[in-house]
Picture: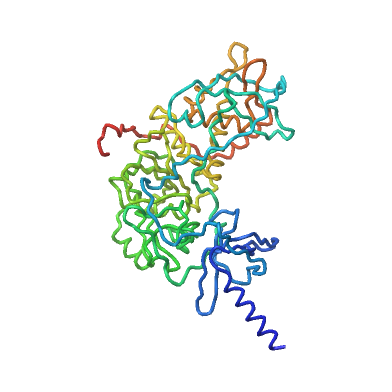
Length: 508
C-alpha cells in the first residue's frame, strides 16, 4: 500500500516536470464563493519553485490578460496536458526595442474588418416612429476619410428578427465603412483583479534606454505581472498588467507611490520621508477646469518630464497594448482630480499629441480602478471633446480601439448623438431635419464615428428614396434612463483654456 502511494507521488512529480512554458491544459480559475467551478484552457507562461513549493503562471485562453495569475499544481488538470506544436510561436525571452514608437500610444496599425451586409430592401418605418432626415457624408480626401473609403453612401438593409443586426453604409459595394477600431482603455473594476504571487527573483527587465517596454511583442517578461500591489494615497490596488518599474521593486509586496508627484518608493518609511520634502498638493501644470470638487490640470510632457514618465509607468499597470517610452515631449497630459482638505487626488487622465496629423484628440485614457464605475470615464471622454470644441475641430481617439475601449466610446457617442436627436424640434410643422455634418459640428465627434454609431444603433433606414433616422419610443425611454444616471457633466463655462498652435512653436 505504501509502495502504491509512493509510485503515485513519483508519477505526479514526473508529470508536473513535463508542464513547461508554452504547454496548455485546463486550469481551475479563481472564482467567488458559492459559484460553480470553471476550468478554462490556459497557457503556461512561467514556473517557479520556492522551498519545495511549485507554482505556475498561467494565461487563460480567450480571457483578458488581467486575470493571469500564479496557481498551485492542484489547480491543474495535468492529464489533459497539451504540448506546444512545432509550428506554434513560443514566447521569446529576449526583448527587442520597437523603433519609431511614442509614449503611451497604441499600435498604429489599423486592423480593417470586412462587413457582410444583406442587400434586401428594408421595411417602411412605422408612422408612429419619429423620423429625421439626414444628408449623406460628402466625399473628402482627409486622412480620416481615407480610413473608411471615400464617397460612401448608405444602402438599404433589412432588420433581423431580433432587431439587433447592424446596418452598413456603402456607395460602392467593394468599399467598407470605417472598421471597428481597437484602442486601449481600461474601465473595469479593480476588485476583479486576482492577487498575483511574485517570483523569488526579479525577471530581466527590458532595456531602459529609449524604449522601455513593448506589450505588442512576444516577450514573455512583459506578459507576466511584476508588481503585486501598489499603495496610492488611501487605496491599495492590485495591478492588472506588467509595467517596467525598476527590478528592485518587483521583489517587494507593496510599492508605495506619492499621490501628488507619483514618485515610487519601496517602503512606507521612505514614503513618509519623501512627504516631508514633497511640496506638491496637486499635479504640476496649469489648472484649466474646476467645478465643485472636480479639477483638470494640463501637464506639458516636456516641462514636467519626470511627472509625465511616472504617470506613464502608473498607467501601464492598468493598460494593455501600450508601448512606454521615455520621450514624453510630444504629449500633453490632462489629469482629472478630486479635491479635499488634503489636496487634489488623481482620479484619471488622458494624453494627447501636441500635433496629430490624424486629428486624434486622445492618445490613451485611464480611470484609476478605485474611481471606476462612477461616471468618471465618460467625464474624461466628454472633456476631451470639449477641448476639441474650443479648438474648432472634430476629434477621435487614437486607433485601434480595444473591445473595452470601443464599448466605452460607443456608449458616450450613442448618448451624445441621441441627446441631440431627441431634442430636435420640427420646423413649420415638418419633420425635424439635421445633417451628419451638423451633428459633427455640435459634438466635435468625427464623421466616421457618427456614422458607425448610427449604424450600430440601427437608426438609419431607407424610406421613399431617402435615408432617414427612425427613433422608437423605446429607444427614447432607454436613452432618458441612461442620461438620468449621468450625475456629473462637463460645464464649458468652467473651462479656462486657450488652444496653442504647436506647429508654430518650434520644438514645443
